[in-house]
Each structure stands twice: as structure tokens, then as C-alpha cells.
Length: 190
Image (cartoon, rainbow, N blue to C red; front, side, top):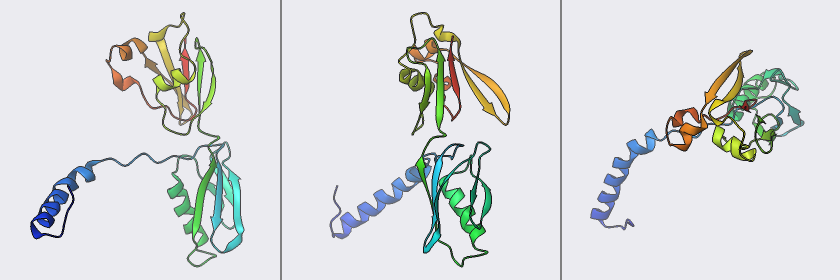
């Protein structure tokens, strides 16, 4: 419905807007991309030509940048890293305008191994769940134990195995097990 300039239409549009605000506020924001080891970032400071460069996030999750020193980047959003670099540069540059851009998502890789048609590592540029990862690997072979799949995940130096039963998903049951994979996860299809 188009709102015209009549008072009645304007009042109706205002009511519709006020009614829809709680629904808009309840809509969760999309998850921000979290920087991973191996990602290549371009960091630049406006009007500071010497402070523009591509940096790679080291395996320990850190990176180095002039005047800032060492910064932990892994697990942070681009906005969080940008705020941290800006804050550290304030000691040297009044009101720095910092831009952080992801040039390559080299650190966001998942692995699918075992009885699938195309096992290997798969760089991902969006959220990928287990079923999507299996599809990326060409599906399972006829001899795969589809109800004994495991997702290996390493967190804080400890590895865990998350069970996944494909048969449940086929039936539309226990859909919560079709988790979104994280960088470094390994889907094992026995």
C-alpha cells in the first residue's frame, strides 16, 4: 500500500510502522565473519600511505602492523579488529580512520574425508552445514556408514567428535544435528 499525503493514509502508515518495529527488532543480525588463521587482510589508514598493506593472519592467530605491533586477529570480526587497530593507533595519529578488508579467505576451510565421492578440503565463503559439506564432496559412496558420521572439531586445544546420523536428516528428524561447520572442522564418513 502506498502512503499518500492524506492524514488518514499517513496515520495508517504510522500505525503499520509502529506495529512492525518489534518484529524488526527481534530479527537476529547475520553472523559476522570471524577472521581465521591464513586469511589475508588489507589494513589501511586514511591519509597515511606508509600504513597500507596486506597482512596474513599467522597460524597462532596474530598479525603484525606498523605502530600497532602484534594483534590477535583470529576469532574477531573485521569490525572488532578495525576498532582495536584504531584504538592502538590513537597514540601516534590523531583520529585515525582505519579500514580492514578481507582480501582472501584462505583460513576458512573445512575437510570431508572417508567414503565420499570427492574427499578433500573445501574453502568456504559462507556458512556451510554438514549436509551441504557432504554435497560439496559429491555425496557419499554406496558403502558409507551414513548414520555413523562424525564431525571432528578442535576448540581450545581439545578435539571433540560430534555425531551425525544422516538417516535422521533424511526423515526430517533431529535436524539440530545438521550444525554449521567452523573453519578447520573435519567431516569423517566411515
